[in-house]
Image (cartoon, rainbow, N blue to C red; front, side):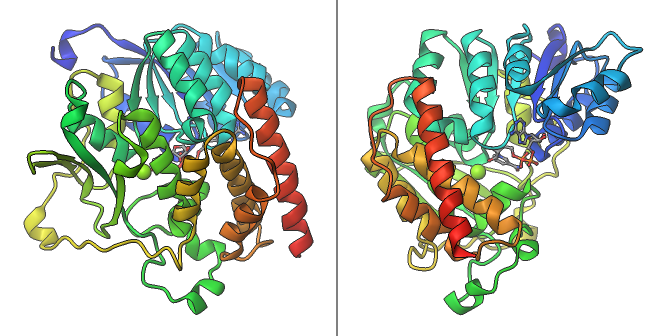
Length: 391
Ligand code: NAD
Ligand code: MG
């Protein structure tokens, strides 16, 4: 089916003011007769959210910070947009019946609303990897129970999704996630001691929000992605490999038992995987620059250095341990990154803080969503106390 042959799709964009949200809106804006934006969310930026809601004549606009609800209501008073706020408002908004939900909230805060979208069986384009890191088993159980179409938007997982033979998973020998290596790929440990937030958020290939940019610089992002991949694809933990590929042209690969390696390539632009989710199962013109391999001329690969970037090993260990370990890893990392971005924690102390939180909270199996949130909250308290003590 051609994208132009179907009726317009209704769309929910959770995290509309962020990097993923903005790329999603660019795609929608370029094909106005194919998509109707019905639900938009943002955490703080009321003015931008109001403007977007007005532009798209959205049914719902939801602001994460409840203190800003009145301001948003006043800004949209002359429209038909319903204004919601806070975590309950986000979940209610996610339940509004649209065809596609782009889950572009950053962090574990995205879990409850994304799960609400999963539970109504929407097509969910998942950028919010923290959902799968902090509650992967529960999340995937919900996906299977509700017959939800879960489409990975994270570029590596989207690449694997496109080339993975789900009909014959036993024919897969391994999957390989590529990593750019971030802005400090070649930096020495001495250089890493002096990394500032300004330098850490400047990613060489991708333009992204601050949290994932820092995660890319520590390689925690790749660690989170190993956990994400394990939940998304029917492979063993040992079958998930990581390789540094600085050009970010090969977005990831699947190796088969016959020696074939299938990969997805493209210019590093999130509009490709987002468009895949928005228009699934057919492709649409994303406006992304055509890949110019002759211009790029060479592709490099190297092993990740776990000595300078211990976060990757730590995430693998948390996946092996299972239960609440990945939840704790994720929550402690979110706190550590926030402290780092505020200039209150050194770059090399990010993985150290995560490690100390992991080794000081007892790890139990996760029973329910409430239990996940409890473990997440406990890890945040522990991480905050430890980070504050370091200053
Ligand atoms: P961002 O910081 O640019 O945007 C985050 C969005 O979430 C904003 O709209 C913000 O208002 C909202 N938000 C923040 N905190 C919130 C909270 N507590 N409750 C509700 N909403 C909140 O982040 P981003 O780079 O767009 O990343 C979003 C997600 O997508 C992350 O999980 C990230 O790992 C993933 N992802 C991003 C990229 C990318 O290129 N940006 C690539 C792959 C995966
Ligand atoms: Mg990625």
